[in-house]
Structure formats: structure tokens, C-alpha cells
Amino acid sequence: MTTSRETRDYQAADAAHHIHAFVDQKALNDEGPRVMVRGERLHLWDNDGRRYLDGMSGLWCTNLGYGRKDLNTAASRQLEQLPYYNMFFHTTHPQVIELSELLFSLLPGHYSHAIYTNSGSEANEVLIRTVRRYWQVLGKPEKKIMIGRWNGYHGSTLAATALGGMKFMHEMGGMIPDIAHIDEPYFFAHEGNLTPAEFGLRAAQQLEAKILELGADKVAGFIAEPFQGAGGMIFPPESYWPEIQRICRKYDVLLCADEVIGGFGRTGEWFAHEYFGFEPDTLSIAKGLTSGYIPMGGLILSKKMADVLVEQGGVFAHGLTYSGHPVAAAVAIANLKALRDEGVVTRVKDDIGPYLQQCLREVFGSHPLVGDIQGTGMVAALQLAEDKATRKRFANENDIAWRCRTIGFEEGVIIRSTLGRMIMAPALTASREEIDELVGKTLKAVDRTAQEYGRL
Ligand code: PXG
Image 1: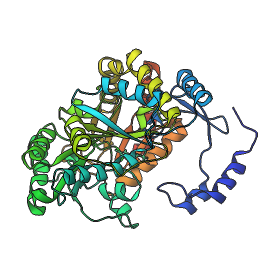
Image 2: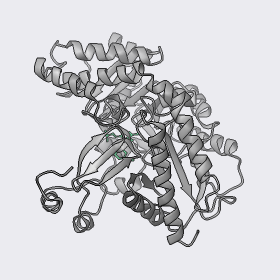
Image 3: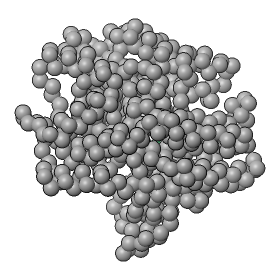
Image 4: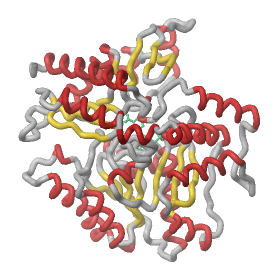
């Protein structure tokens, strides 16, 4: 399918008007971005009619895939009936109420309240303010430091950048006071002789050391993604989360899970913290809440926290014009109903998720370029490595992985690279044929990369 304008015409206008995310603008303008024009299930078409299997659900968000008529209908009906109203000044509306009833029916029982936003970054902005407010109300205003992790990602606004651990983002002026970081639990990067279990404990115990260094009376909360997404789809060892939870409880530090990527079925559980078996006090959500069809995010609070804020907190001095937007809420309701009623999440756990994981292990388990395979459900990463046995990574792993990603595009598959890791997170609704296409085309890309770098 082609649209009425030439691709190079779009590209010139794009270069004239846009600063793109996380890229050298001049280099991008020289190359010209791909112009995507249509999507159906897991496939995308560009302006020149080339077809791609989207192995990344857009940016980890189109959990139901493209082209869903039910989401489209939900939006258009709501646009006709009430395109906008808000939750300020003593008003509310049915869509946001019904969304919350549905959402809390899917969440574990100890969560009760939501503050909606437009994005994951905003959810984490609100998180910092809410956590600090909680401790203020409890008479501990000095408890305000948030601890995050190096190479964690929590968004791109100022406070979300600071919470995250991407140093190159901090260097662009992205730090605020009262934020600290500990190391990530990236076992493949561990150069010593610890077992994964020992390493996981050691990584978690950095939190205890950091809390003691800063003073438990000053630390408000610890934020982390249950598994790191943008940082490379890194799964922590099994010993990690129980130890983190023990430490947070011991020092009365709130445990804040960033579920922006892990939420809404990606792991085969509704939320990734359920897969890893811990109980956070807050959940930051976005992306899969609406399958990316319309922007919406939010912060979920435990009943324990909400009770303090509601019963003792007085005025909560926060609000966004579009918090709980009725069109976004209508789309979110349709999305959650589809994920639930079509058995999408259950299928990720029992059928299509195991199928993806099994295919990846069969195809890449002894590939000369691949040192490790991580993942569960509909998310996975191939760790490229020079030597699997010693976990030796390539010195130029970034270049190799980026090259693999570029070849992937030539082969008609979209996968993501971070450091030396090839990541995939396809739509949860994928068929077996679509998974076969994803794995088959990824193999072609990895093989061609291995040939170019003399490994095959
Ligand atoms: N938390 C997490 C865990 C995320 O992954 C955000 C917060 C911020 O959400 P918004 O909606 O403000 O973007 C994210 C976003 C990538 C990639 O390439 C990842 C994200 C966004 C864009 C690209 O991996 N994650």
C-alpha cells in the first residue's frame, strides 16, 4: 500500500520539523526514517509497501496487535458521546469508574486506588510526589530519597530520567536531588565466580547497604522494573526479588514496581511482579493498558497507602488535565476485556509464550553468536557473546547488535538491540505462524551478522 506522497518527500518534511528520540539527528536525516503507514495483527507496512513482522509490539505496547476493530469502536463511540471531561473540581465520569472497577478486578486484592496519567514517565513523576506525600502525612517528611538502579529506565521527563539509571540521559541535565542508584542484577555481565543465586543476593544486598549509607529515616522508596526492558530485557536471578522485598520491609522503604513494560500479560501473568513473586506497594503502568492505541498511564496504590492519603492526607495537590480521559478509558476498558475474555493472558502462559521460548532455545541454543537466552511468555532476549562458557562479551557488542537489528529490517523483521542483546516482545495475540516468521527471520539476521563478523 502506498499513500499519496513519496517517501523522500515525507522524509524531507520530517527532517525539517522533528527532533527524534535517542538518535543523532543529522545521521538520521541523512539516512531518512522509515515511514510506517499501516498495521494489521503483527505486521506493519511502510510507505513503499514493504512488510515487516513487528517483533517489538511497537515500543512494547501493542499487546493486542494492530487493527483491532473493538478498540477503534470503543474510541469512536466515546468521541461521539463525551470526548472530554475531567476529574477536577468535584466531577468524574462513568468511563474512568468502569475502567478502575475492571482494572482492580484483575489486580491482586491489596491494591485499591489509581491516579491516571498519559504516559509511563508521568506515572513515575506522580510516583515520586505521592510517595513523598505519604511519608509527610505519616509525620516523616525527611523520608524522601528514592533509590533506583543503574541501567534502569523509568521514562524521559525530568524526574523519571533521574529515577532511571541511564547515565547518558543524566548527562543531558536530567538529575534532581534526593535520588540514588544501586547496580543492576545483570548476571551475564558479572565477571566473578558467583552462581546466579549468589549474584542475585549480592545485587539485592546493595540496596541494604545504600539504605544504611543514606539512613533508613531518609529513604522513601525503591523503584525498579521487575525485569529491565529498555536496559536490555534483563531478567534478575530468582534470589533477587525476595531479598529486595525483605530489605524494603525491614527498613520501611516502599517497594515501587515499574510495570510499564511488564504489565498486562507480557510474562503470562497479568503483572510481572506476580511472575517474580513479590508484592510491591505501588505499580506504574502505561503501554499495554490501552495496547498503545491511545496514550494512557497511571500509578496504582496499595490500600495501605491509599488509606493514609485519603483518611489523613487532606488535599492531594496534584492533577493533570487528561487524567482518566474518557476516550482513553473507553479504549482501556475494551483492551482489558479483550485480554481477559479472549484468554489472551492465559494463552501467553500456557501456549504461545512457551512456544516462543521453546523455538528460541531450539534455534539459538547453540548458535555461535549467542551466549544466553532469557525470557518468559512473550518477551525474550538473545545475549550475543564471544564466549558462552566464560560469559565473555564482545568489546564492540553495541555495533554487532545494531548491525543485526539493521539486517533484521532488511529481512522484514523488527527486533530491538540494547548493548549486546537482541530483544523481542511480540504482540500477545501472535499465532504460531507469526512466531515462526519472527524466529525464522531473526535467525536469518543473526546468521548474516555472524557471517559478517566471522563467527559462522
Ligand atoms: N517505565 C518503563 C519501564 C518504560 O519502559 C517508561 C516508564 C516511560 O513510559 P513513556 O510512556 O513515558 O514512554 C518506559 C518507556 C525502548 C523503549 O526502546 C522503551 C520505552 C520507551 C521507548 C522506547 O526499549 N519505555
